Length: 82
Image (cartoon, rainbow, N blue to C red; front, side, top):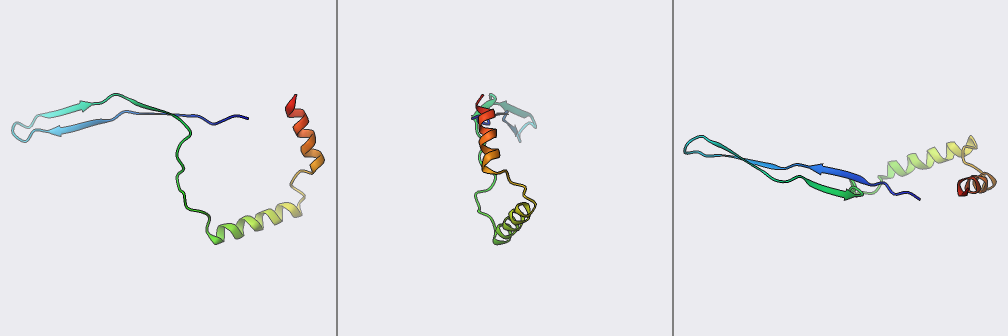
């Protein structure tokens, strides 16, 4: 089993302007690195229309015999175990 690991690198800086003499000061901070799995984009569950669309898709795929049988699954597991 593998785990997806992401590497995010973010550089931050702040800019300020001195109103007395018009000078611009840039205060750069070190690069922040974050290793690991990224946070989810959205925590909201599926809408009722999404659930109906998923059920319809699964029904259509079953009608075309798209899913593998238990024997095919066992064979695939045996091959992957080698």
